[in-house]
Length: 625
Image 1 (cartoon, rainbow, N blue to C red):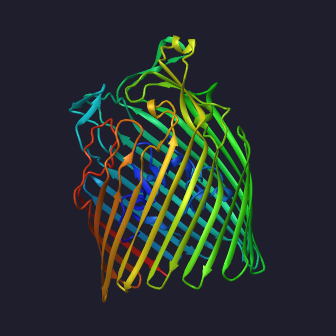
Image 2 (image 1 turned 30 degrees about the vertical axis):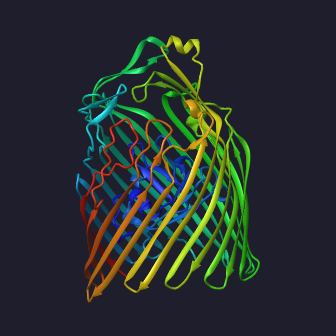
């Protein structure tokens, strides 16, 4: 990860894993894993669910690439252990922990278009106490790849919309660990995050407000060793995630004051207006027990409470809440030296959807020391979001009709059936894996157009939509990855992901209820990387080449986005390597062949990259062992 020098977590994940794709947006990170989007991907930080989302998109901007120890990706339905949202898979981001008596790290990265990232962390061990304090700052001036825009079904020039808006964010975090005694470890964490997104205003586009985000998270936990390798853990966390409009011009809204159709709500320049406040409480207890050398039992309980405050957007008021309570167990049985069988099940009780069971079984068979055969079957589960359950909002999106959006408390949980088979080869110089999979989803939730009520007609509403369990989806695919070390200083690696994701869509003209490609998905994605490192006394040079290919991205409406490939070269220079101090400089070129997608605004584009851009970074470390 240090060799790649990513400008963001999105950039890092998409370049190093072909199964993951992204397309940028102000509302967060639009992730897809093997054909399914954010809604079906569970993102965890140090094994804990990443709470808070903006319009269904996790905001990965609050994470600092320089503070990541490693990233674990579990593909396929993992609801038996992790619960809702883990239908496509799980991404677990492990942050760095202080291992030295004292450690200070500073990372500075600058690039074109005002791209700046500055992060610093300070860690220490003092007796039984460990601490890591981190600060991360990121800014971009944004860029515009085209001045053309589809406006009122006509292609116009002179648009001032930015492909990527000017934005600034920073994160401050504190992680504490206290070793109370030989058996008990206590942890505590706190994070504060703010982000500002400045949007352009001009011809063809009336933009009255910018975006502002304000998040706080707090967590505490404990681990108690029972003896041998057995242990118990308990964790609780609270998060508050705020999303606001910062008005820079007066705006007359699409909704009315107290349902009086003669009194529009008006906002004025300089006002900061709350759009939503999401609060989440999570608590879990877990035990891991070893019975002899052949059995490992993992069992636990979880509680999740989710509350949303959103003026003018919630049924019967401005607030709504849901909760779920779950219990799970998993047994890993080493039947022989070559055969391991794992089976687990989770039961979930949800406030609105009732009880759900999510079982999973997987097997590993080893052929000698180099070849592993794997197979798994699992049922996935995803509960409806607060928005899908309780939404009640009227507005104009994208210059269309004034539309009413309604939640539905009669929604069922979305479910899936996932199966995979795979083979791995693990040699000294060459490692590779090939996995084929299928994922069938039922009761997928979609907005469906319904009749406009007389009350809505009085409020001048032209269309009305409601969330309903309507669609099915099926995904077939295969993933291949490899890594090759021909000699000590050279590493080659990469992967290829094929996915054929299709779903039924309603209200799409001649596509009505036919299986068509899931929006924003591509069938073929591949990555390739090659790196070389060599040291001369205290100087070490590393050169890395990284490429990514993405085929045509399919959409139901408007247009498909073109396929493309981008390449990066990074050079790493270890200039200072002393007992306590080290300095590494990186200089590189991203998008080497200057690919730019100039699709006009209002149509689907492949990528938002501004083209070839140069960057440099400096990493300074101080360690006192």
